[in-house]
Length: 218
Length: 302
Picture 1 (cartoon, rainbow over the protein chains, first blue to last red):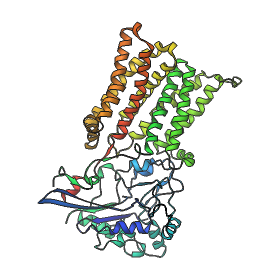
Picture 2 (picture 1 turned 60 degrees about the horizontal axis):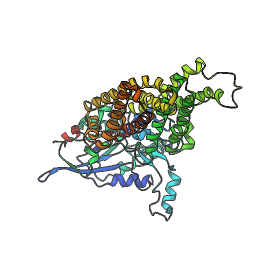
Picture 3 (picture 1 turned 90 degrees about the vertical axis):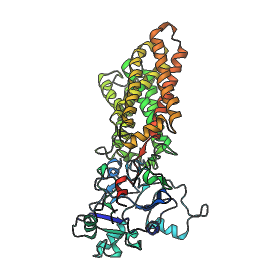
Picture 4 (picture 1 turned 135 degrees about the vertical axis):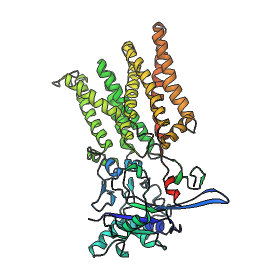
């Protein structure tokens, strides 16, 4: 069984927000909710300024604290390492949201559900609600586009290699800064990148063993 | 690259991020739910030991209506609350809710023979079984809130072994004070217990904060927010003055001059204990900070 993971090359990323938008589009996310985000900022003052661009998303940790604290079992980790939330089981206690050291979960309050406030859902939004039934009062997060991976695998495709089996944010990246593949396969593209480029995840000290790695060295 | 340099505009990446889910907006209900569960169970336990059945009944009502009720109001899907008992093996929240349900059910059974119309029940409220089991359950219900916080490694300010002990002492202290408020006739019995509790409570608060001030950078940040940051007014007025100093002064005064102790003074201490404990909990929830998402190790390569 593979363990899916992602490698993001910060030297290649240009901060175009394409991953963020493609994710929002893929999952028909309501206003204010992002599964994938691009954090852009700058440090220092002129003339010594450093601009930082950090694409972030759920780390699909190997030891996910969110799974342990969930009192209902709504948050689960699949055999392939993808951490998911079942909207029909979640009670909205937000324990998972609080314990995530990466703060990559969102609470769907439903207060701002429509893009055109007071005018109801557009046909596009209605279709999204049917395809991805997100329930008000529950916690939502990135699922590594599990539905795309599962459909692709059934068709004999390889996630990370074949576009039709690869997460939307990876496909959308115009500079190939994002790479997706099997972390347990030493010959996969992601394993090679982690090894060769010395990629590292965020906050190793929490012992969560994230599946999203960042290349920071040139 | 120096991380200490000012970062703008997304402080989230390199600065300490506040915990909001459990103290802002709907999260305020959870802050109150934990508080009422704790003081309700504290009042029940103190009353149980002293055979003060009215106090026990009031404690049970506080725990059931305010503690459990506010827990339900806080949830995004309250009708599914029953599902929260499904994961006692790994979830502290799940364990706490199971124990609270047991506490409420057995507490109701213990109190029932004392209620008019239920005297026919074939057991006694002060049976040893009830006393032992409900003491154990009460202990867990009092500590349930802070125990839930203490296992969260992402928030170093909460991730402390002192939390459950502080919670236990504060629960019993505030419970004892409320019992005094309802039992002017037996206040001397509570007074001796209360004397020890207020000193233990003050020492534990100091120990907890000292620990936070010497912990990880994130817990030190939380400590600074309380001691000299934006939360300092809440901390110094709510916790230092109302929760600790005024009750301590009244307790010492009552001990030194028992004849001078008036009920007004005692009631003032009860009010201070309740408001002060609420303020302490608010400060602990509000001061919680996450580590910056991007740390210096990540920046070194860029």
